[in-house]
Length: 178
Image 1 (cartoon, one colour):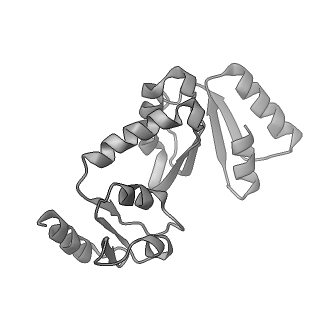
Image 2 (cartoon, helix red, strand yellow):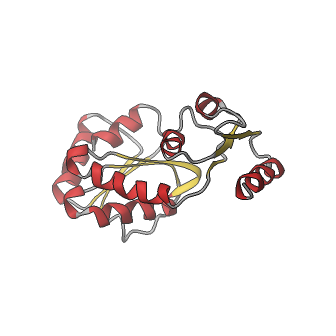
């Protein structure tokens, strides 16, 4: 429960914590009570089998990597159902506990990609742009703070005005026809 408690302390209006482990759920509830935290809900269950009652701005996951890489990959896919549009997904995985093998899965995705597109409205520094750059993918993103620090317009990609569908389409056509 520490991640959920910290998120609440940093201003989250509502926090839902889910864990399949009975002891983890009990400890999270105890910590919430000890710290007098409100608007936090703790549920026991399998995240992969649950249907979200609402969508979230952010989902933070500390997956049970010992259950296997396939479960972790399933969690990353399932998370889309829990996120609002433009929501953020963060996963905590230690290198010595599966981080390397999960990164290998990400590399497979990048290797079969021809273009990377991130039409974000807000992102202070999107690491995915750096990942795409590491695979030498041309990038199309928006003229906002984060992408501006990494993407050089017309050199390693294109920067477009946020929400400009016409410009996005034009830039993607250039990259597709390249």
